[in-house]
Length: 627
Image 1: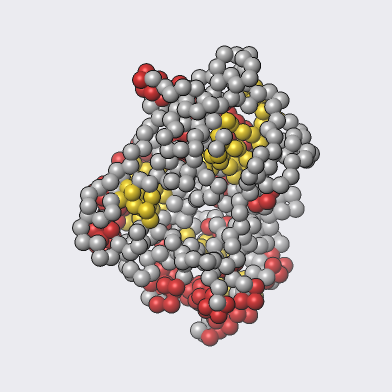
Image 2: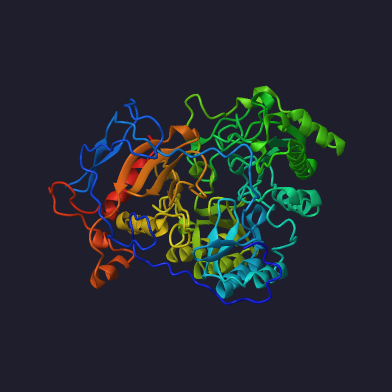
């Protein structure tokens, strides 16, 4: 569907028919628990090179595969050297696009298998409690009765009927969530979610995000940006600066801001960017030292054009305008090149946004800029033995976030697998009304609710935990995400959300209360379940990739070097007959340990039955542990 304009009536709500059954593989929408043939990964079994993988299959020292004991269904060890099973590496974006940007919006709806999809941009992730309630009403009246959070801090409404576009748009306009029809898809502004709340970072840059959004909507040329062009506004803690945005603003000491333009496509972050600061409550060993240029320990240091990426310092009051001008310079460069480019790094080399080009654009508007010293570029830089950052190293930890003075606190929670029922969403709205009437949706599929009295915040955290939101960094659900999968996406080979939920339920112990701040769990990698090789919405940095394929799930560790995907395990598709009524009822029970997927007889030879949920969960859990 193109624009929703001109649609006069809503044809009625269309709800998705997602079943609660658990599946561990499958290549069609009709596969259910236990469907298809499969066998366990047996002790010592080594997968052979298969078609469709990347080249290479020799032994590489230091590469390790997880091996499952086929008889007992448990992880029996890590092998120091295994054949390098070919994997499907994350593909680089093309340097020149051949079609129009089809990124969905609130007006340009996307047709999916479960109806139409609308993506509502929330610059900075900011919305009022009243706006949040309007989103709930829209999803309730027009969509599938839930809200999805995206990796850029937007909200999606799924399951829309073919005639609902005009009514949805009017609801959003009335709520102040659609200030410009022509610019609604370019309002991609990520903000440090805890900016101004916990006293960390260098400055409160919340106003920068709001000003930048206003400038975007008020500039006709900015409507030429693609729906994938991303701005990041970082308060100096290094969280959204690690998102690989096209234009990044970073607060600096003394009333300055660092303007960074362009990212490295392989790393997903600007070349030479220093390691990010761990958010409030983090383990101290992940934060870099104080930069030579000053500022709080762990804050981002500057870097410059040594990596051919413009990095300029501007006065803080000019920062939002400077970000807009850099984006307009990209629009001009794309037009001059004659090629289609959606992101800064896709520009042809001869039309790249060099430092002189960006500086000239700023000077023409009366903004003075100075180059960031090369000496600052090395401070806190990842590499040289430093750990690569992952999404869990920069995202706000779930739990209470004390505000300066200790009398008030913010709530930080994560949405299980990035999706919230309207009942859970409305609990967050109620909590926001108990605070200062504000919510912040984070780029890590979470929500921050600021401004509650400390006692109220503790009470609300318990309410949200009881409702099933992730409120503790020790939760097995923390850092686990999934794409839409079946039945909503035609390209998906599995119902990855149901499989991920089933695997977690199979091994998650009962809650024992929040993890004390001084005893945070060991550092782990985020996990992302994908239904196809596009891996829509996957996290940045290092992460555990659980990828559905024709023969089941492949478990590997992805990193900033996209060509160095490391396969650490494999889970064949579940086998066995279709479950009967009793088995199906058990499969629909969220806490059933294995349902109809219980392992076959111990010691059986050959194909001995399906891999259990517990075995898959154990393999994933082992893969995400950081040595």
